[in-house]
Image (cartoon, rainbow, N blue to C red; front, top):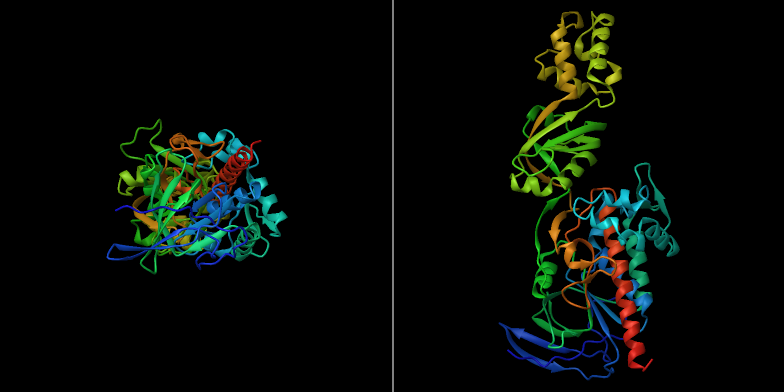
Length: 481
């Protein structure tokens, strides 16, 4: 089926709305009933010198990139096309507080180490061009006061993601970025010269299709398969996405009865079966939480991120070894237990856990139960072999991973467009000129703590800067400079 394609150009000062663009915009509107199309032409009023950037995705990377492009090139027409609500992941992140970035990683080498996919590539110029301090300065300069918590996570002082969302949407409107929601870019191709993108956009609530011709395309659609399809249509390969940042289901009903018990610091080792690695273990240190289905907390989420592809291939089965008292050597623990036995010989073991272990009573009962000791047993009756076994269990507690759980609604994937197909200093495709990517559509994912958003801010900023400069150069060229 042949369509006559017209330029789709938006005026600068259009409000952020889902309504159709004003009469001085030009596009071809197609209506459909069972794929039978009729056309309704709109008068064309703009000159061909006006360039258009279409941003696929109204998330953090897309909106930030659109703002930056419009800031660098004010005369560039910029439209964001989002199928759902804009900045929806920003809204729910950090329990509704929005973990903007991480403030404890000024060194780009240390920062890069928080990305299971991307840790090698991000050691280059990526964060030098726009890092966490730049992100914090940008939001502060635009009226969002930020605070850095003890673990490095950065939140708005308001403790509300609305502060971040309102800031971004207000700035986008101020710059003249057009936001269109409830629409999906379904296909992307290029013209014969390879300089224009021909896009088909469908409105979700109506049988309407718009055919758009754009000069630049920024795909920032997150982990949505929409972005992967568009990238593939334009010649890119896709690393199959698999879940990252998830909790572990543990096959131990007695442990899961301890839901709510937390540990400020554990060392957790995940054994990987049948994988090609120098070590069969992944190791993380940090806080851990017992849930009604298993284990969660930063240490588990980091293990899930680094082991995402291995766990996927093993159907999320494996063995987890946890050191619940990482700051004490096993010999010291045995000595503490022996002294405790002498000092509290006439007390019940359940009522008297060595304070050096910093364990809550519920978990101490679990440990005793795994060693076959009744809580009513007196310390005087505990054998030395049992003391050694308790120390070993606390240092090397093995738990069977029986599956994965989802980390609330903050779903992150490992997979997408390979970084090898992108120039990270511009975020432009190496395969197709004027095609850019940013955010989770790429094969990049970070651990919990603000790192996934920082990837979005950095990638969006770099892409927007690159597009803006290209547009300015094109404008000067058209004017004969």
